[in-house]
Amino acid sequence: MWSPEFKRQLLASSGPIVAALCGGMTSGFTAVLVPQLENDNSTMHLTRREGSWIASMLDLPMALGFVLSCILMNVYGRRFINLLVCLPFLTGWVIIALADEFSLISLGKFLTNLGFGLSNPPSMVYISEITEFRYRGTILAIMVLSLSSGIFASHIIGTVLGWKILSAFCAILPCISFMCVYSTPESPTWLASKGLTVKAEEAFRWLRVDSGESESELNLMLTQARTNENIMAPKFQKAFAILLIIFFILMYVLATIKNRIIS
Image (tube, rainbow, N blue to C red):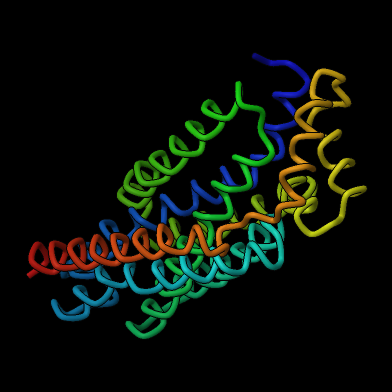
């Protein structure tokens, strides 16, 4: 399992994995924030309506980020978008940590939820494209575990130390994710699809530690890249539209459930 190739591919996946941890903490943050602000001893007080707005803030920016990243990652690359998502995450958490009124908390929540939506598609696609088949399931499972761990950690840290300290801690994670992504290569598949064959080969060999066994995989990747079949190709548009409809329906249902629970 701990072969040189697996270590390289896990290292390359570390940025998206940390971003997933941050996304999980974003998802779990509301359950910590709203009860603490509604407490009589809080220095800030939320009305029931304001609490409902914050609880519902996840859905729209996350959906917006999801759609934007699906489009942008095909134009600018998976690595670039994985770097870009660190900006709304970092800005949002800093704003929340320094917030002293409802409007600032709402702005911070909007940005962190936007980052959560932006991070999901490029992270999954990037990991799928840089990992070998035998390691792909393990690394994707680690990413899902990281997301779940983020939700759990936000509840523990927020309950023990409070929402402001939790926000300050969460602001560190995008910085770690940025450094991890910056130190690793772009997806060889995306580079090849843009005609950057030399860079694609360099990135591929870095990920595979110059393994001679992977030459056939490299040749297949370059051959498939020449067909330039991407997520915006006509034959994928119908499936993509169906996924978006399902996603928005699920977001609406979740928002309705949250509002009823809070009210």
